[in-house]
Length: 409
Image 1 (cartoon, rainbow, N blue to C red):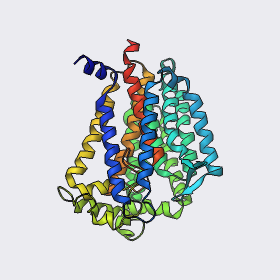
Image 2: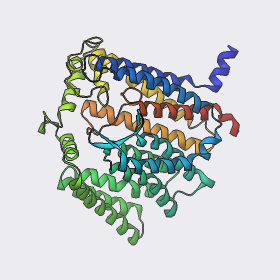
Image 3: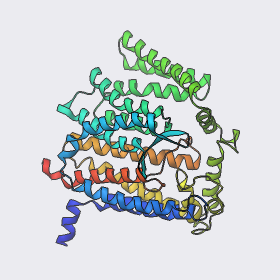
Image 4: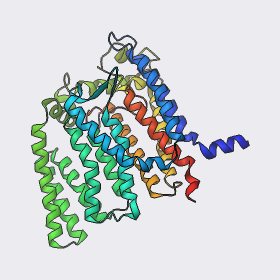
């Protein structure tokens, strides 16, 4: 009993076990999705090796002195920016995105490791000497820290990962205590941009809502006009950005709005994923028995659409188990923010939570047809060594904070 108490005091199993179980479920699903594939049959073994490396990385990070994270936050951010620049110059193009660097036989995605660097650096900046995030200068610098890697990732181009970086940045700024008006200034351009996707009428209505909100905030005329111009400018900038997107990226956005417009092209994966999940029924068709999976109706199913493997072969029960494990993980991460005793640690946990939740929400949404197909892996489950290692590093950092939480009391 004494040993169990000491373990619980230093190591939170309610975070580690869901992550471990999700990784195991991912290995099972990857094995099924690649078993009969002529070129991907070796991916299961690669993911097993990646899992071992990820666990070793987790243990190393968990064992580090906590001050190391703050000490290396800025150097890690600078290195990540340099790697993102390097990948644009000398990277390998995969699935239309120049996002991979090869070091001999080892390939990795700098954008994955840049997530860790962004969370550490931005948390350090926002927590430095109780910084006032409602100061325009500090908000500007915080946004700059977040949007430099976003711009570089968009140049790859990797829209899905850029969205995750944006969510991380905005989540950390919000958690730092930004005022309601400040939050409105940051988020309203995104609201107007999304509204513009649904036609001129919805776009005009969104601008009217922005005007109403500005009136309710009762700010001076100059600030109100400035915010409105920013929102108007954001919509025109998005229209320009949409036009310079590659055709396949434009198709993804258009197919999200209407998946049936190209059922054999960009809408194919989303429609087949919904079919696979729906056909699983309550208990699924059984391991290695899924028609969509085994007959390879969904290309690269072991990556972004791994969830529909679970849905088809293990049914509603298997799908719910995955959702429950993620829910336990997210709730526990949120709980640990109240246990951490310094702002830097709290913001790191919030960054980890926002990163994993955004991947989870967008990926599951892709599989059930409620979010666009933007090429984001499902944490711990999807095939990909870089993603798995980074996710376990994140868990290691959080549990390191949990282990050292009483040092600040």
